[in-house]
Image (cartoon, rainbow, N blue to C red; front, side, top):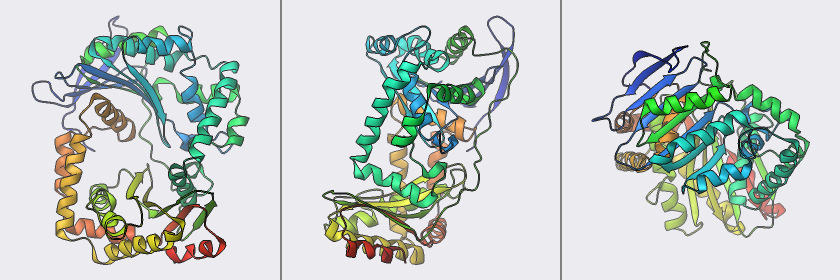
Length: 459
């Protein structure tokens, strides 16, 4: 990604003790869509996008830590910590945290991914100072008490059980393991029953101190907001908690990852007494910084991104073999995944896999038609804009962009990148990605004879 503007101005703090650096990354029209960034001396980055036409604001803090940063023994620690930051601080109890946002009709939540964690609150613009104070307090003043760790352990074990009861969700964790094996990217974000039971308050506190200092954090805020006010309020909250120093510190650079070992031609079957068989057929994809990601997005949309896509038409519309069938991509710092999911009756699983494999092979060898590519470009451009219609989506975009790329791209530039994708680029990435030998993950009640035939789908 590239920023449209990078004018830098020095801006002293309110107490003139240190200098913060402020940049205008994207200059909007009449202040609408302007993205600005301030880096505080302690290494904390604050990125905002102004949208004066709305009456809401979403405030979030992104941490440069995900399940990928865990050892095998710490699997699940990042997600566990996400839960614990809601359990109380030196200023607020767990009830105080939740009731503060409920009292103003706000929404507050968090999520943990493979390479980052995000905590956020969405409120009326007039209640933004409250949201800033509460979320900053959670990130800087969490107590992580022994009793809270013990209580929350039960909730997390229930969350793991809930996921395992949903095979349509669980099969994606299985596919990550099929592709990456027993390393951090291949292990579940939630952890396992054994690893969660083994985590202690001391280990989680050490994990917290290591990964939640200001150099590892990005503050993102979008909506009817004033950048300078947000900076002052965030800085005051962090300084009051003693979490920000006056000395210059360099923010952590975007993750570059390490070459993760991926497999091909591997099959994993998890036997479950389910009504459907849930399958993911896929292969290595692209890293998130790969220049071919725009063409990959078009390819993915044409293959399984909508009702007119190849897979939807062939599997569902023409044959009625599945209700849900789609393709998707997952991009990480150094690698990625491309997968095709389908849920079908166990007796139909081999027909579904054969059709999916035939379509992938056909597109790898012959490419997509110009009409399919043009339709996918239009669909992708439209969904990109529609997906950024609320302040929460805007906050996610600018926060993730700063954390993962260290740069911002305007919506217009994103649309231009998609529109510039050529049929030859799509056909080239189809050959490179879909031409690889796939791997397969299946959850369902398949009998021995059916299971033995699964290797035919990846042969």
